[in-house]
Image 1 (tube, chains in turn green, yellow):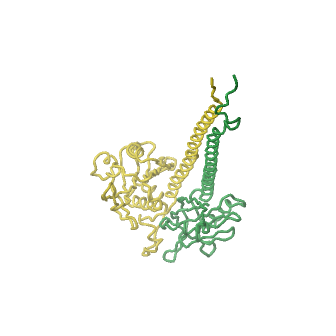
Image 2 (cartoon, rainbow over the protein chains, first blue to last red; image 1 turned 135 degrees about the vertical axis):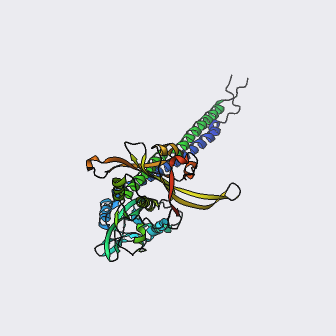
Image 3 (cartoon, each protein chain N blue to C red; image 1 turned 90 degrees about the horizontal axis):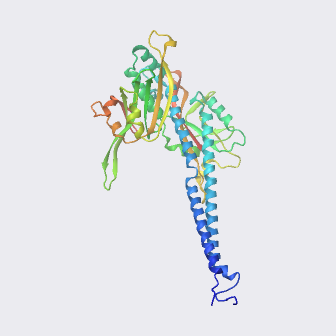
Length: 193
Length: 259
């Protein structure tokens, strides 16, 4: 009895139809794997960002009392060490202030290690004889300013994280020509990108 | 007898089995992908909200108030210049009142309401309860509730328009310490609590004889809860159990009005 050759294409030819589901399966698998890996990396980055923000906020607000602008700037200097991994800006508002402009206020502001240019909406404190805003921040070398990422470009989505923290701020007020130090409630706004 | 070659069919079945297995693995990957990070994000959010409640309580105890109970913002805004103000810590007013009468005066209650409103004003979507509990007694030394009250009007198709929403402050005097745990906490979702210990001393007593109290702040996202809606003294049970009187009403964008 000889070997029947009906329907026989060849050693490889016979297997060609089975290649279709195999190729399809491999395509599905690697697509899903790539998508999962991308989401895994994205979630990890978001978690790291949130943890960084938690750490910065706890260092800056301390026990939720800011006695003066010098103390605030000193705490900020302790946080923004060289090669700090995050871009951030922190500012303090009065509790009565409208917070709907916060993102625009940060977009207008610029911070360097030696200088801050802040929005007029920020709470101000005295350094010497001049009033300066309660504002501090850090920008990695080569990173864009927050205002520039909001200018937005093309198809790249730049994300930022914004949180608010209640703080008490000691401030100087003058009533009837007499200076008083009073502690008022404020809001510390932090943005990280 | 003709034998059909079955090698090609076997290979095809194998590849279909392979496709089935890969489809199952892909489904597991998608399931993992949708739920990855949820637990960690939830924990980080919990850290933030717990910090928020703790920071709010600290700020309330740090801030200065006017000794006549009026709004400090009036002076800061330059709207009162008729007399030299007297500032002090809110805790000082509370301790002085306790020392005299073991209860808070109307001026102090007003100062507490204005301070709470000022500290938590930027976080307008929350309701909260500020309280002082005795460790040795069953009732509250002080309980203030700040909740949203408003009215809706039907706008057709199961939709409603907001007529108004105000923040109302109540000074309550319930008889039992578990009233919040019984009527509020289980029904408003996540409640972020912050507590601390504080000592009040009665007049003539030594500091070492001070009585310990728990000072607390419970914060939750505002919810429409029937028992909270009905806090007036004439309300039906269980609103009556709170034994509240309205202290202050704050409309959005306007100054608060004391009752």
